[in-house]
Image 1 (cartoon, rainbow, N blue to C red):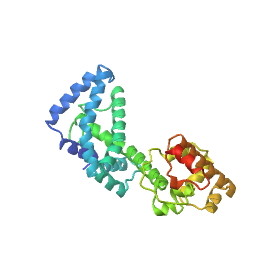
Image 2: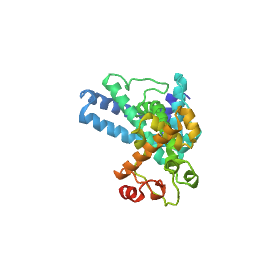
Image 3: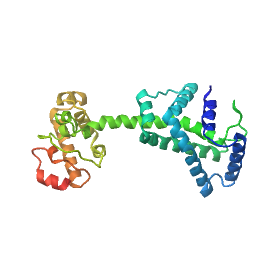
Image 4: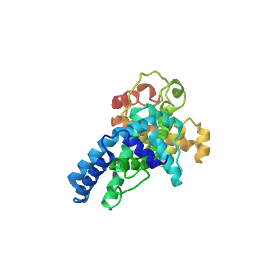
Length: 281
């Protein structure tokens, strides 16, 4: 079965009413919106209604893996490179929060495209004749969402990879205390803390630093020894230590500004512990 037919079948399985009657209603609605140039309050109401009707359909398709499979077929037919990792597919099937996250971008992209198409005199029309005949507006919109899944998935997957790379910065396991993660970066001498919640992203503070400092800190957090850091970045040992020290200073400054909270157990032995902790608390 081709992609278009699969989308029609999927949508019609959840929509009520006769297809012909629905297409007629959609055509009347588009004609009405055309008088306003597909802008203004009337069009905003249309977008909200389209969003609310499409949302449960798309969430079901994400849970079953249907949306990803349709996107893969579309890209394969168009000769576009696209791949969905099995682990990601399982996560989208099992996690409602991850489905919600990726759905936001899918719907936003499709909504922007359908708006551009309508204002440009293109997009859905009741006269379209596919293999299963004319399709309703919702079927067309779900098809646009399938096309938008590729971009939304790549963005979502990259964010998950970036989070995994930075995870050691929040990793307060025993291994992290022995040299990796933020504990190693701050040269902790003791490690006994209760679970804490950190409201500020360390990545935000890191991005404020010079590129050379960022590189040193990232490699340090990933657990690379100084000898390998110096080789990779073509820096001296002194420069590596200075760059790391600058970032520690930036962290403590952020703590004094109440942007982050650094547990006492992670303060360096040379830092004025009471002063720092008082500013970070």
